[in-house]
Image 1 (cartoon, rainbow, N blue to C red):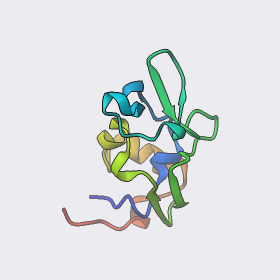
Image 2: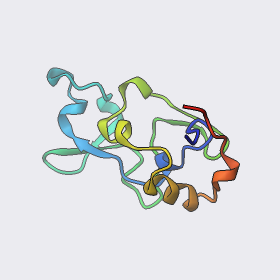
Image 3: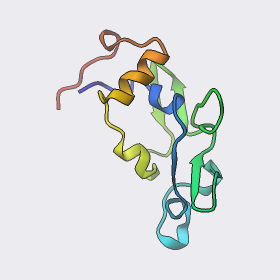
Image 4: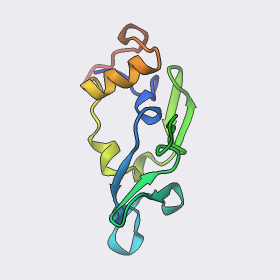
Length: 108
């Protein structure tokens, strides 16, 4: 499995959108509302990801070096479901000039 803590490309490549209730504490949502923005009546996005040059406001560190999610335990379902090594992951890495030989492999 590819290591995400040395990458972060996915957090700076795509709009991270999800159903609004994930950011509503009254419905059991855990994503901090101050880190989201409304994009439709039923969807919100992580702040920073709905731009031509996306970068999630919760991303800490330098892409391709060392990164962390500032709200990892509270991240959205979109982030939880994103798979390291998937086609989308490799696309994001390519966009940022990160080759798989630059990212350590972590034993599962």
